[in-house]
Length: 485
Image (cartoon, rainbow, N blue to C red; front, side, top):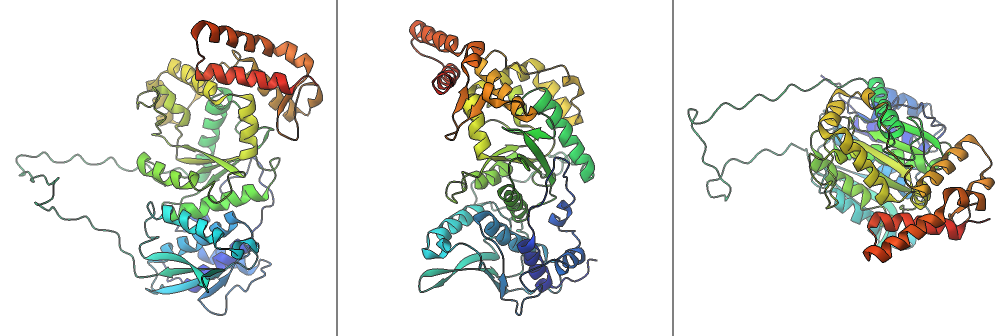
C-alpha cells in the first residue's frame, strides 16, 4: 500500500521545483531520465529533496495552503505550472491525507504587466481550458479553474478548486426505453466473448528510446520520409539536435503538464541547442486513435489564440494514424498512412521559424506525393509487419526519390552545407526577411528557369496546373526572383 502523501508537500514542492527549473543543456543524447517524475508512481521524497536543495526564490512550504507563488514569465510556463498543479491533485486522490475539498490560489508575480492590464490574456487562457475539458478525466468535473477577479479585473492569480472525491464513471444499466437498446441474448443464443489479448509488457525507457531512434534514423532519415531529418540525432533547417523525451503520463491532465514543460524547454533554448523534440507517450491512448486525435486537436487549435504560433508547430504520430485530408490517402489500408505511424504515440514539437524555412524550399504537396509513391511501392502489409516487429532493417536500401525536383535538391544542399559549415554565400543563404536566395551559378546548375518554362508549357497545354505543379513552379520562381546575388 502506498504511504499517505501530504497534499501540501505535493503541491508546494512541485511548484517550487517548476519555478526554479531552467533549461541548461539538451543534446541529442538527452533521454527520459526526468520522465519518471511524470508518472503517478514517481518518488515524491526525491522531488522534495530536489526542491529543498534548489536555490528557490519562494519558500519550499508556503505559509498557508491557499496561496502558492510561481516564477512563470511566459504563457507556456504559466500553463506548465497550472497543469502541473492539476495533475498532482489528480494523482493524490488515493492518499488518506488528501482532503475532499480545498482551494489553491496560484499567483504569478513575474508575468508581464500586460497579462493583467486587460482581461484579454485570461480570456484566451480560459477559452483554451474550456476546450481541454472535453478530453480530460477529472478537470472540469471535480477540479475547476477560475481567474481571481477584483472589480471585474484579473488580478494575476488563478483559483484551482477540488470540489469532491472523484470516482470513475460507472456504466449505465440497460434501459429498454432507450433507442439503441438491444435485447440481451440467452447463454444458449450467444457465444462466450473472446478473451482480450494479454497486455504487452512495456520496455524500459532506454529500450523505448532506442527503438524510437531506430525508427527515426531508418524510416524518417535514411529512407527520407522527412526530407529535413538528417539522422536520428540531427534535424531541422539549419541542422540542430533532436531531443527525445519519454513520459509515462496516462491521463490528459498529466500529459498536458509534460507537454507544456517541453514547450518551455523549446522556448528557453536556441535552435542550435534544441532543434526539435519528440515527446514519446507509450501509455497515453496507444490503442485509441480517435481520442488521441481529439486530445491533439486541443494542442493545435490553441496556438494562434494563445499567441504562440510563432514559437512552435506540431506534428503527431500514432500506430493507427490515418490521414484525414479527403484524398485517396484517407483509407485505412493505404501505405501512405505509415508516414505518420510510429511505434508509440508521439508529439513532435517543431520550431515555427524552421518550418517556414523548410516550406520555402520544399513544397509540402510534393513531399506528400513522393512519400506516397515510395510507401505504396513497399506495400501496406510489409510496413505493418515492420511496425509491429519494431524493426526497419529491410528498408536500408529504400529511399524516397527527391531528385526529380531541382528546388528540393537545392534546399537539401543548403541544409547540409549549413551543417557542414561551408560558405553559404556561394550557395544558398537566408536573408533578414527569410527569403531563400541562390547565387547565379547555383541558378544555372539547378536550372530553375527550365522548371518555370515547363510549368508554362503545361499550363498552355492542359489549361491548368495540379497543386503539386503549382507548388514546384512557385518555389522555382521565388528562388529566381530572390537569387542572383
